[in-house]
Length: 112
Length: 114
Image (cartoon, rainbow over all chains, first blue to last red; front, side, top):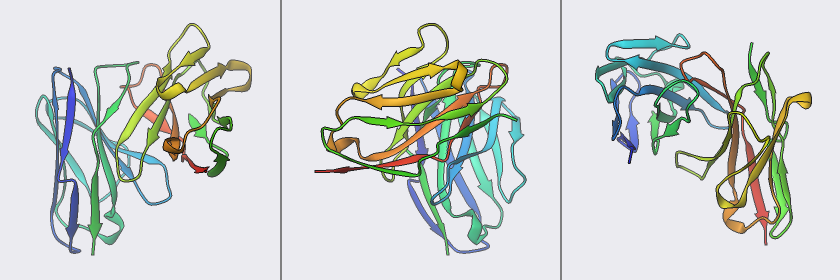
């Protein structure tokens, strides 16, 4: 069966420090991968999605970037964090168009 | 542009009472429709989905939802709520032809009174 994992689960980082959140999917190949952010009291906002290695689409301009160095690995990064980057980040995957999106456990980021 | 509206930010029901969470979408064609549930500090779990066919879909944990094209709605229902159903519920729309991206509503927080 397919599984998705993301880490770290919790992160407290100072303003201006770098960020790296990692997500991996097991049990499938060539998934579509997603990074969502959920800010307090708000819905989910799609940040990035990827349909293949090295293919990244950004949905909103921001201080973050994403990379997909391997088929089942998706990384969310920042060179310098802002206070507004705080939130709950969710990685997700789907096997293709029209299929269900499955979410990881989420990563809490607090920028102080 | 596609959008999803969950009109109720917070709902409180008594344990054992029935529940209906509302979801309306804006999309020119028949979308894919989903309901997810999120417990505090956790990821999202799929409750049910509608792609095509029977407009009444059954999900996990005793939930069901009905797609009504004429009303652009996909309301979530449960006949008898349990205390463990307290969580936040998200409706989402998948756009046909997109790369599987979902558009989420802002969520409805459900509280259950004993």
